[in-house]
Length: 165
Image (tube, rainbow, N blue to C red; front, side, top):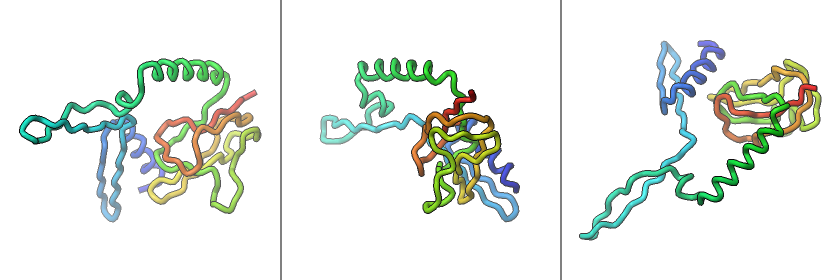
């Protein structure tokens, strides 16, 4: 199985919403596990007679954030999107772990303020013990790095903002 086929399989699983897919072919075994963005939290309530019962599940975000904070977060997000609209977003083509350097002792591929050309390697994403070089699809100046080094990334997650001018 070719690397491109594996990457396409990962993309397909991410879009499908499946939580786990196992594929076995000849001498290859692949297991792809995805996690949902919205984690659920289980709450136990005590009932008379000293037993415990499970309360309805609700998303953890709703339990932890007061309504006023949610409104300000939405307003801040909308304002930042307006400012970033003139920039082009470099997105992750696969699910994996984002790295800005080829190895810990090497310099980063691209810093904020660096000029990049189409085809320049801007980062690597590790997926299933394979390090995939991510090339820029646009030319321009890197304005912002949107992901921390060694962080997990999802398919189509924004990684960099690039000013094409």
